[in-house]
Image (cartoon, rainbow, N blue to C red; front, side, top):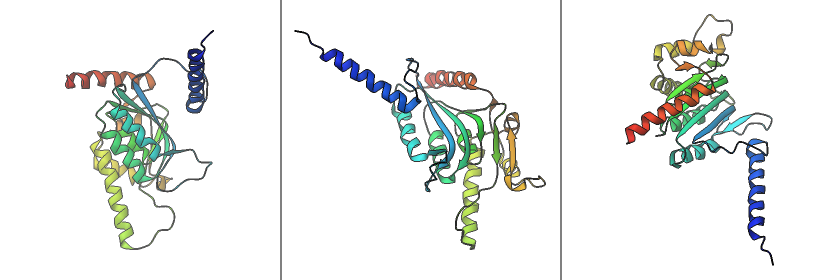
Length: 235
């Protein structure tokens, strides 16, 4: 008489793992190495209070918040890598994510690949250290409202206060000054005046917004450096 319960259980576990891999990664076989760095991707448009059309590539902030909580609480996760390729999106949702990343006790590094536009700039600077790829761009522009806008003084006061919140956060978490950041936001004389200022790679570093130009290997190396520093402080 043979017992196949153990084999059947292993097969079921393997099958479940493959299904999870397909769901999360789009493929069956992924490297078996277990990393202690959690990769958080902010891609497309940051979706907040309004549900965007299905054809839009979005990052839903209510999906990101539990991940950040898990990073903070899971002892096996030693650092967070935030990968950004975003056009921006909901200001309050983006600012909420930025505040959560900034308040993590574990080392955090961000890297802008492709684009880190609009409120994406706040998320990019929220980490302990930030990188931007040489070809990546960041657009700095004033906050805009979409949909129905009531033309009363209170609306403009609300916009001003929201603008101040974004400016204050970026200045506190980067090397740029309030004067410089507002200058980038409201730069006049350019052909695409309404767009604001487009920063390409090194430009974002030169104005103090991003810490360094770099790629994936630089970002991972920096997380390991910060792990050693923070680990030493804890001990």
